Length: 98
Image 1 (tube, rainbow, N blue to C red):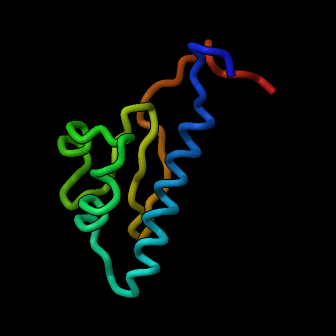
Image 2: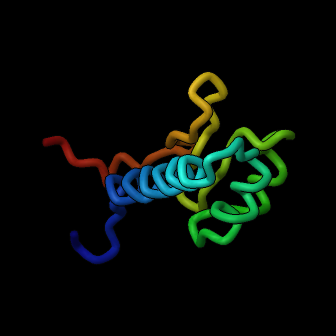
């Protein structure tokens, strides 16, 4: 990818990686893990996370994690997991039609 371009695909992949990490953490715990624990152990330490926005808009209990890029993770209570979502606009200049 050329310098100065935005790799939205990589951003989504990073979101999925953090989602998978959370899923693995819960699976390996072998017990119920609340979102506050996931925040403390996995999400808060991540350099992707926009702490200020997540604390302001993420909900109580925590339902959304906002990243510093246009993506984040949202909690699906029916599946008890976190999946990527887009919370910001994408710049069409960086989108490629395949």
